[in-house]
Length: 427
Image (cartoon, rainbow, N blue to C red; front, side, top):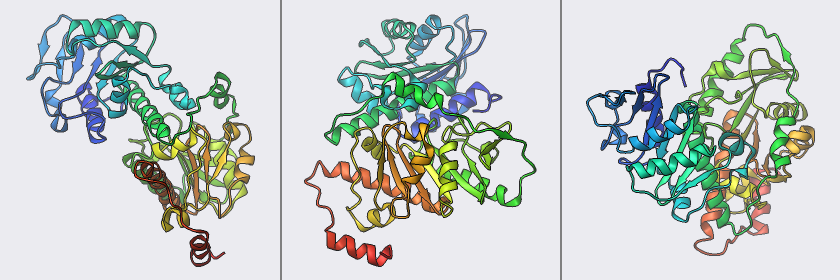
């Protein structure tokens, strides 16, 4: 998020994203920003979240006076109580995303040890007992939970509140917490136990070696074109919910020894061409912080000259398979089998400890690897092919999960598979 944005605009942009991706309803949800002087900017009461305007955002001064044409959200006491109890907090998100509401209805909290990234972003989640919405009692109860050190709190029979050092961090936690909740729900539908990471496994990504740096020269026209195209597909992946703001790495070759990759901890929904980082000859351009997946992508490109683009992603349905150790059966419809082919399964940690071993698992007939507790890794000849392959494995995974509600999966026969191999794959 642009640090020079006015609070009105920052709140407006993030509420638009939350509403667009159905993480709240027209009447639900509220966001706020606290200024260093104690002033609070907050969304208004009783207004259509799908038609919010910057002039609707309300300023509540530290002395309690109100500026703006609207009344502040009825949940203002909740926000104020959290700010009083947590001086480090400068941004709050409260909303009713369906997965976290489901957890709130059964008095449960998603375990963010599902992925190393969700634990890194959210930490452990807290739980606050029910109180009347908009009441001082709700504010007191929720603030007390935040004061225990939680940054993501489930509200019993209500929804969720997340907080951060700024509104962008609160939003990242909100989106990541909801993603963890959705994945757990989908994984449970597969009927196998969900696997969670140990402390040692969570620490593994922090121990991997960073690539050395090099001083780059002026960008070629080819590099500029790859930056433009790759950026377009990263944003599309976010719009398609194949990425979330904190998760997903996408790279594309520039030439035989160079590739561009998404940066570390840059919002995937707002990424720009200049944010992408160049990796050349196993080194990363100075001044750029490449995705933590850069070493794996480098090993894959070095091993497979025919691969032109790679995605690490966490689409919720395919990721449900990764946290249960289940394999996506692509023998569902011809497109699934022809495009995705036969995925492999890699044990957790291989991508951090032995990128070359992970690279060796890939082949023309096995262009996709399900990474245990780390989503999927998809490869292709170019940016479009790898994106299509990611979409297809996610659609296949969703259809597989949905099929459990209507009957027993009937995969295509060996004869049909042999015909597809002969006609479409040249085998």
